[in-house]
Amino acid sequence: MNPDVRSQMPEVRDGNASGVPTAGFRLPASGCADLHLHTHFSDGTFSPEEIVARGKRSGFAALALTDHDTVEGCERMGIACAEAGIEFIAGAELTAEHSDIELHILGYFLDTQNEKLLTEIARFQLVRQNRIREMVARLNELDVPLEAEKVFALANCRAPGRPHVARALVQARLCSSLDEAFERFLKKNRPAWVPKAKMSALEAIELIHQAGGLAVIAHPGLNRSDEVIPDLVAAGLDGLECFHTKHSTSTSEHYLELADKFNLLVTGGSDCHGMSKGRPLIGTIKLPYTHVEKLKAARNKRATAAAS
Ligand code: AMP
Ligand code: FE
Ligand code: FE
Ligand code: ZN
Image (cartoon, rainbow, N blue to C red; front, side, top):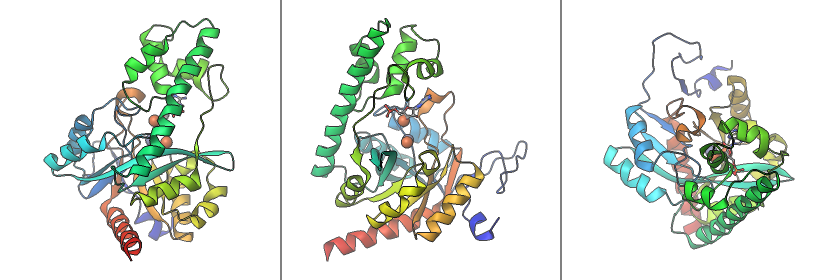
């Protein structure tokens, strides 16, 4: 491995820096960040306060909230972080597309009161709500008697998604597990799957920038992102999420190399959704704080350029 790349690798839980498992050994997370977290304001199960308490126990210096298509949880998470002595970065994960490829664009350092941002995300929240009704209608056509109101009551948020439908199916004993719900009904091209109208990735980048933020492609290893990176770089993309729970070491290295090639910032996070994926993922990715410093410098540079 190129030593330059290794120096950027996040610390690995229960392992050493090269990822070799070391029984009983746990590296401290101090000076580290998790920049990809979800709460119950989208499809996570933790409250902002619960996720901050867990972040504190793991020793994180900085946390970012990146709920899907909403910034609603940021105020409470900011307060909880301040009380815990943790630096907070307000963010969101916007569902977008480019050349028919679905991409998740992370926005960091967002002005959560920005009018255009709030208007646009409200539009896509409505798309999500209508999609829930459509998925439920398809389930009903398949003689699965789920009610949309049950899903909305369970989700209790403005940005409901497939995980809420899956949880409602399990709660109503119509499926025995979340996996079964996805496998039988909700995965792409399964009978109750409904495609989601998305904003263009180029619009997402512009939307994030005008709200004072930085735009980063989330988990590029999961979305055939490589072919679209040059177009997004031309549109002002700021970074790549090189470290993610579902990235192998070689995938992370690949995106570190691309970040270097395109002069992009490096981010990383666990994509913790609380208990919905069996165990909480917070603590499994520890991004060295130097990357947060670089993000802040880039954010300040953008702000200075916008002001002049
Ligand atoms: P949506 O935004 O409504 O399309 O839902 C996407 C969410 O569903 C993401 O947060 C994923 O983590 C989750 N998800 C996607 N596929 C699966 C799956 N096969 N099993 C469990 N969760 C999934
Ligand atoms: Fe999610
Ligand atoms: Fe995502
Ligand atoms: Zn996510």
